[in-house]
Length: 186
Length: 221
Image 1 (cartoon, rainbow over the protein chains, first blue to last red):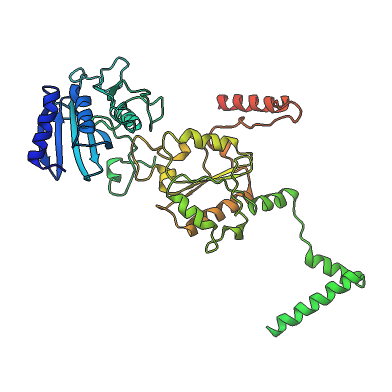
Image 2: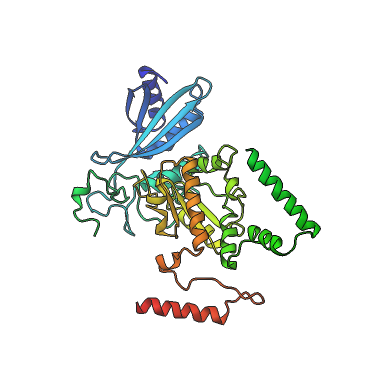
């Protein structure tokens, strides 16, 4: 991973091409992270991929996260790898929840979903990973060639990995919680 | 040991006499009584069914590893006549649900079950296929008997091959007694039998009448 000054240089390089792309940099837990403006994700990814001396040409992971009590609520993480130098760099695009406050909870018909540009043009491997992020978190990727559910059934309703999604399952009766359901045997 | 060998020798000699046609009268009657067993056709058929169950080749999750080792020489389900795992549901008559059934897999399992020819039996192996097990969440069906009939539940996570063999032996006992096992009554599925006519492939009028009658009885009750 690039060290903190190296990360600042990368951030400056990205900023030179498009103002306001990098919001913040952080080096924590041995991960160098660029927190980027969601509008500038494609620019940052493209810069890291194509710039001489950077060469982060491998997208090793794309995943979403939900930080519910925090705002902005969602984040899409991009993990890039430079295979020549075995260096990784992390990009994080924070996304606000457009449905915040209206209580729709991701299951209504006209729901508002967070949107982000798709990076399938830059990294074809992002195809399935963006579908997974859409499937579980309901993040729309603009320009994705085939954005539909990938792991859950196609007619499934809701975004199951969101933090406010009920976990499901059924209560199971054990001896330790038997007292909570009196006369269960009737 | 010596005595047993003696009596065995005596039986061999008597069998040789019978084949030669030397046995007559009381001797012949005794010989026949010793060796014949009378039963009903139904019992004989069920005995044959119970000892030639063809399982479906169908592994769902980690329990499938135990199911596979049940076929190996160490546990050897061939002792009970169920070693022929069939790759087609049309040829199988037992489905072992070996693992968790996810919401997306459930229609597939149900379809495989529907394609099996009757009579058919199902063993839910392990905690997951019986109750959802540790996967109490949105993605896993909480018990396979929510969407299909199950005859035997084998507990364990995963059950050892011996446990599965024990469950299988229990199933054999049930099949010997009554191959129907009454699952249609248990699951309110009376009248869903599929009887086809050979020429047209359509259900016979008799079967349709029986189904209509059963549905009527069910709604009346």
